[in-house]
Length: 240
Image 1 (tube, rainbow, N blue to C red):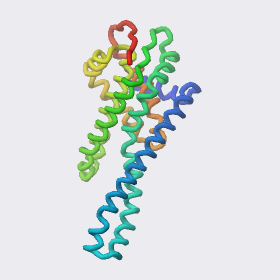
Image 2 (image 1 turned 60 degrees about the vertical axis):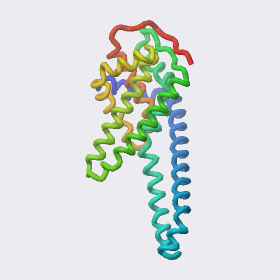
Image 3 (image 1 turned 30 degrees about the vertical axis):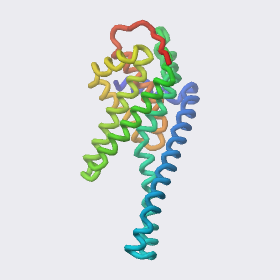
Image 4 (image 1 turned 90 degrees about the vertical axis):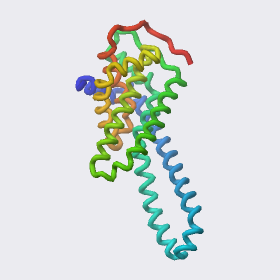
């Protein structure tokens, strides 16, 4: 597993990967900005809807002071919220670049083996959206545990490892097997796949560097799939 992680890291900044890196980072930044704008609009709406009631209760001056404090808190909250959603964002981004990344890994490390079949964009995007939405739901449920000192951070880390290991392994496996078989393979090796997810969770927790999570996670799971694949099924072609 450590060898697979090192192979993925060593290839991340090779010239072919750099081309995918810039596209991946660009899409991730666009999504983060859109999330920030959405959170900002939501906070403005919530603030304006309560202003009239607050002025009648506290008076205009007190409301102005509270609004100023809340505006600072809201700004910090938007930044924190965007960072907080980084695993979900990178999971969605990965679904658009899984084939480009996996193909580079196959050429560099497995030239004598049949390459995987490109995933239909709709299938890949659907898997990415499902994981991103599930990640948001799990994180919202886990948020109250942040009040319990470091316990909440542990829950977030483990949840991230589970969700991202599931996403990246299945996306990679679907290039070689039908969807149902890919999911069965992941379930049959769920312990090993989850442990591999700890590496991805650690990577995505590093600021700035986590923008490259789609490259590391996909490349890492190609190596893990090759290790766990067992009897090799015939090459498949995915329909839309």
